[in-house]
Image (cartoon, rainbow, N blue to C red; front, top):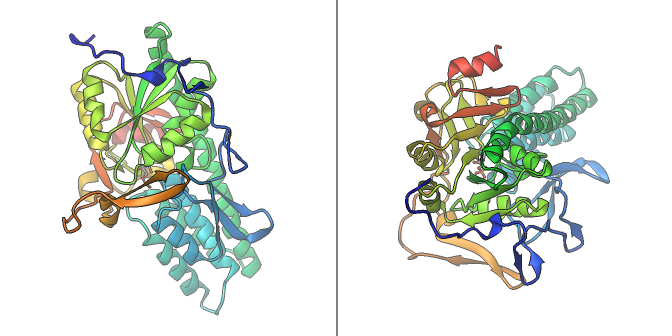
Amino acid sequence: MPSNPLRPIVPAADPVQERNGVPLNEPLQERNGVPLNRPLPTIRLHPGNDCIVQVLDQRKLPFDVMMNDLLTAADAASAIRDMQVRGAPLIGVTAAYGMYLAACAETGSDIVGYYHQAQQSLAVTRPTAVDLFAALKRSATAILAAPDRSARIAAALQTAQILAEESIAACRAIGEHGLPFIADLAKAKNGAPVNILTHCNAGYLACIEYGTATAPIYLAHENGIPVHVWVDETRPRNQGARLTAFELAQRGVPHTVIADNTGGHLMQHGLVDLLITGTDRTTRCGDVANKIGTYLKALAAFDNGIPFYVAAPSSSIDWNSCNGLRDIEIEQRDAHELRFMEGADGDAVKEVRIYPEHSPAANFAFDVTPARLVTAIITERGVCPASEEGLRRLFPK
Ligand code: MRU
């Protein structure tokens, strides 16, 4: 135990806390008639027209729940680029649905050129998450192996749906493989809540169901193991505060939002038992690219002897790269995301500038955590050390 423990500051760690008479850990119920006490669809075919794909517009959460129609591959590309959808697995599935939309609109006789162009337009949307490129390659291969137009449409749709199913299965398995880490800590703490710190959103909103980093947490919660999640705000887009907090609240999982720089302080004071994050790209040697700030959390965890786990479905493993710092392209996004913040003012959602108009800003979206700082990688095939040997043992091919 730390020599100078902090005064109790964790309201959500107590499952019976109330605010204004409302239990803090009661699952969200509904917004504008949409039930929120269960996961929302992140992507689906339009219920009345299967040549339209619908995505949950994550830019609106948690203030509004809105499905956007995607009619063309260009719409799918915009949805990824503008972050209507985000999170590595969901980006991959959306890209595959983009190829399906391209198939629905197929024109001309240069079939190979047509799909190459569609693939390229989707590939340039975001550079870091490797799921995007793998999904596009798989889709293009399936489409071009089909003998005629209707078979190409069917192959494109089937590929997108299989990718979605595979993501669900992988997340579920990651939950099962990650659960024992939480269960063991709960036992060691004699049933006191296990404090887990996560960064960004690697929940179901970044996937199709369960999420990657959240899957073991949801499973623990469902099994009656007391957990409490420290949710990094995750500037500049606040995926932690806006998305992870939202989905934990949907399920009634106790959590507390913290400013991004708080984690190290909490770790020094014994208030974090383990960290679990997702990944956008993990090299075959175990280096992990994830949302900017992950590296600093891993450093602090290492310094404090706290386990740092990365939940990585195989779709996020880049077998062609080893040295993450050298091989992974780090996305730089528009400074607008830093300069402006969005929030609710009563019923209205407003954006405000938060620093001097002419101050330049640099917006790096990801960083690389070297394998040596990663305690273990949790995949759908089990848990392994963050090393080429460890990953190859689980994925020999
Ligand atoms: O920029 P984003 O919101 O797409 O970044 C998402 C992340 O960094 C997630 O942690 C990662 O994609 C894993 S999602 C299961």
